[in-house]
Length: 250
Ligand code: NAP
Image 1 (cartoon, rainbow, N blue to C red):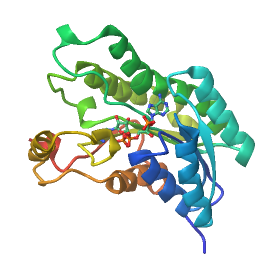
Image 2: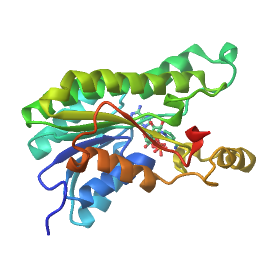
Image 3: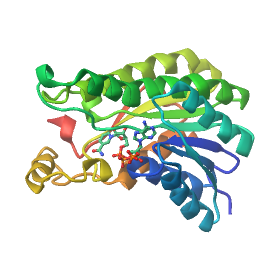
Image 4: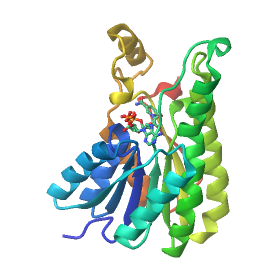
């Protein structure tokens, strides 16, 4: 049976957990070979095992996306394993420091910007030459609703995620006529390990911010990401796509 991503090769960062894992599984189920990159290679390997036991193709890559050399190595490893790169989800991210800006630790701020923003620059910098060699493809960058609107006590996160949206648009313009589409995805609060350990009261408060009455799931975000990566989204590039239970409609 033919699948939508047969013959395609994707790199997914933060692919061991949450949204990245859901995208890696959906892409592999649709025929893509997937480089599953994450901070912990053993965690990425578990997702690879899930993919291969379902008949798909994937490799695990240990990489810190805050380090440009490790991002380049992740791109190279995927190309070496599967012959090309046609798709990417630059997704790895952390919650980082919260609280009034006066109290935000500078090292924590810099780390958040490295992992959530500079990583996307490194990703696209090294992915685009491979996509061009492959004759085109598509990239999605994971931003957030907090890449479209602010919230007072998460200045570093809001800053990084707005940066991802701008970086996406500027890079999409650069390659729009070269067969590469690039979009950003802006999830509302999603029930992933990123939110684990949160007190029930705080979780309930987050639910209350979403008119739909619940948080999203990683699979619901993955549906949008996989659509944007697919040829069905062939006229969609340089734009911002919310999946947020009406959070930003208010
Ligand atoms: P998640 O379940 O925590 O998955 C993120 C993955 O990235 C984890 O496996 C994590 O590894 C990995 N990672 C962290 N730092 C890394 C680094 N420096 N290099 C490589 N990998 C790294 O989180 P998620 O909710 O799926 O989040 C994925 C993306 O969606 C993030 O960019 C996040 O900001 C964004 N997002 C999330 C939400 C939400 O509510 N969950 C909403 C909007 C946007 P460890 O577990 O070992 O740290």
